[in-house]
Image 1 (cartoon, rainbow, N blue to C red):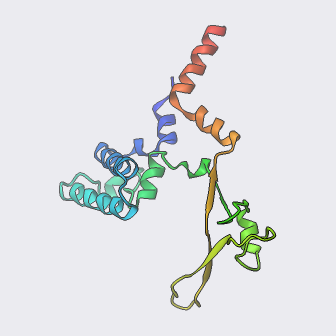
Image 2: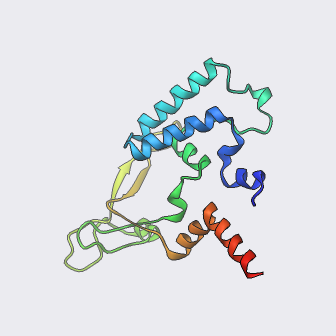
Image 3: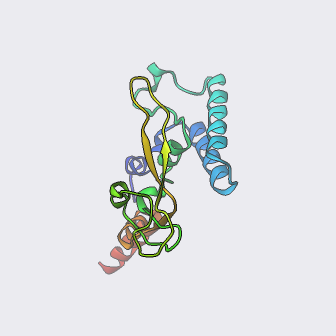
Length: 178
């Protein structure tokens, strides 16, 4: 059986207050299953944090000690709940017409957004002008025009083995073998 410290290292939200964990679950579930936007989910999170603060449930900075600071964004909520599947999914730029897959490095080094396949009229990326920061000039960022997502078998097996029921099943099998 796993110790609670191991559980907390796998799911960082377990180190936080129960009220925060419930808020995180609500925000993440509405985003995932209710098709709430990132902005809507972030607003819902901020509203929940404001309510918890009004109720004096959130610890002050001096009381927090080793506790994590409450999550402020949907991305952080998903990381704390270990719902951030991006680490198991590979995203590759893809041509909008012939669906040729490129690496991110290839996309960054291309001289034009046009696909490299003969007679293909598709594009691989679009350029986006980022807002100017104080003291910095305007930056142009390349954004994939289409993204092909997949999960390599190695990462899929890793994720599968991290599941709690799989670990319990493995322990049962090893006990039966001895």
